[in-house]
Length: 229
Image 1 (cartoon, one colour):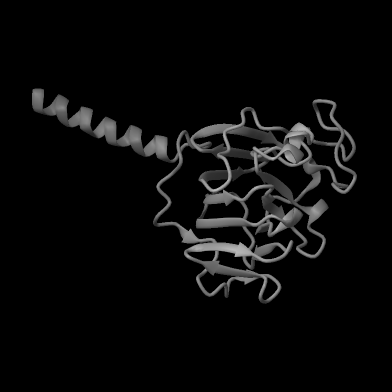
Image 2 (cartoon, one colour):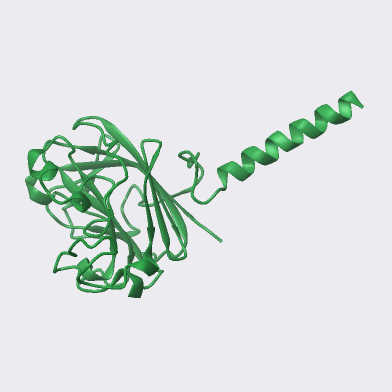
């Protein structure tokens, strides 16, 4: 009987661990080592202006304010990555992009920014690191200072977007609530260039990374993606 109970306890523990790992949203950053690379080493699966993006010491970086996009379009998925800011960095991860040439109103951006920069500290809360840019500020500021690596896991499931940053859930967006292109549910103003309501955006599209915006570089590594059933 003791052996049976022990076996059942072990089985239950393994099942619980598996369920926790597959939970939406994830409670911790996932083990994404076996996931597919978001971008290949030769960038053959990417859309970007030649010469602007490249790998440097294992990190993906850019020389201009140009976005690098996946050729493939993704629906429900999890994106796991690390990023490192420089002083003044303003970047982001785009999801649900249906038009890479006119991406600003046709995607959702998870904001990346240097939390120590006065310029971004004084910006609206929805421009802070971990925000859904222009729409919803992060629940907490946990982004590290420039020169340190941060980890971010973004989960897109149906109309929901979840952001886990450095082990903390900093954002949960229910896209159905963002029905206006002028005002967010909390009453804050939507930037004029985000001219389409988030609730109307397609749920399948390209994934993108913003390049050297505002004159400050950004670095990405360990870029992984996992489609969800």
